[in-house]
Image (cartoon, rainbow, N blue to C red; front, side, top):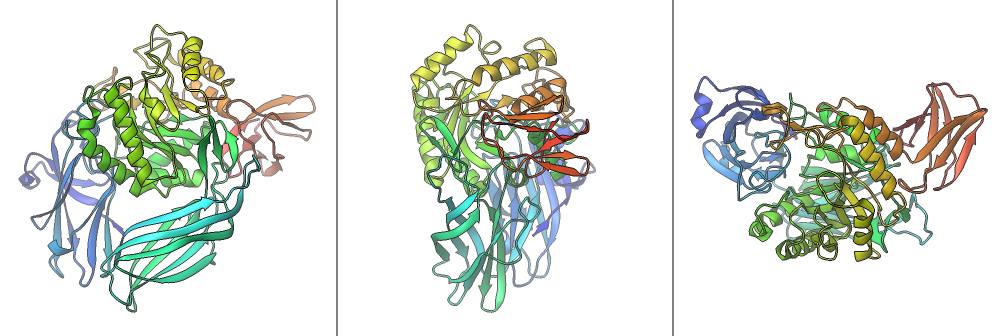
Length: 622
């Protein structure tokens, strides 16, 4: 795989703008929406590069993000289109358009015009409308035989202990869809524990291996029982790697690694279970693409810096309003961050008729799920946010969209996020999701409601169901008070949720101030909403450290003669296993603690001692 980074770029209605003096060299990822003079431009941008053809090989281009409508030309001929979806990846084979042994001129148009035929719809979304090839473009070359899709079964076999299980037996198998297969071709596979650059290093020797003959462009390994594997958990993100090799005759035609994890997360009886343990998980949302110098064209290092800030807040749960790049989910897989990934169906438009966009919904759900289903960090799919959930059409849409998502992936919950359940708790689209996800702005955006009364009515309307307050917080300058008011709201809401056991998780909004075309402050690339416990570039505010303290699974208290750690038993609520105190070069193991249990350490600790998770992530200064 080769990254195509160097391109010529210009804006205009036709490709000949690339021949004008305004055309210039850019490096991908790139967005024009943070550049002077183009900050508010919506329309077409054009990109051009040259690719060398190679004899005897098939050539594919994989676009990991092109906002929004894209057309790809090779040597002047239209090779393919990807329409109505600016955040899902797509792949095109361009072999027929290349001249053997010669150069291939690749020209791409990308149009970020607000559209009534796309998701997000029109202007009904609350983030920046950054145009361009803002994520990497990859060139993939194979022999005659190549992969089209791989689907892995990775299902733990859990014992009814009621406690977290770190490992054990599991079902494993896979299906591979192929292209170009002929008689005599084979697929060789090896299964390894671990993954590159992860908490669990890639094992040199495979757990198992085998070879499969190919039949009608497909290969399948029926699920079978592995006697012992490690399970993936946000504190111990143990991964596995399936290595696949296609051979055509004696030649290696294509190779692929699939990184995945064995873990089970299910909703049952109003509780949320991760690998057999009932958990209540705190979280916070991050709005990517907010650095005004980079916008959506963030580098891998930019994203990892913000993800680390999110994880260091002790948040283990987050959601994204729109689909993110594989780099984001790779990081979440390796560091233990649970994600609800959502299609960008946000807001009331088209008013009262979400079914008008049903073909686009199906396209995006299919592209999202088939691209990202192997990431153990993704624990739920979302079909919409704040779509007027009290209307019959939205409720019918939610039922249909959830059913379609489950037909593509039956292993994860599917949810709809509402802001209207307060109007009539018995009659809202959120009830058709597996977890009721409720945006709670009582006291700010939701006026005329009393916190306890509104929640009691909502909970009583859905007995035996699990809930997540999927947004709560303060937006400036729409509401006054600054960061002290943000901290106050966070504490009041969190402390209200803690005794309500039906609330199995929370998602505070949000980590950062964020760029958005809806922003109340700033202009151009600086137009933003001041909603975060950190600034646009991640500079922390005092409320960030309040979130960090309250989201920690352990309460730390120093007293004469020692340090006492108590495992929270409200929210968050999960057992701590394998934690340790880091004091300079000295590591002090913390015994495993169940919710409500305490441990006192009577040894000496310096003022700089820290509490850390098993994977080395920071928890608290103690």
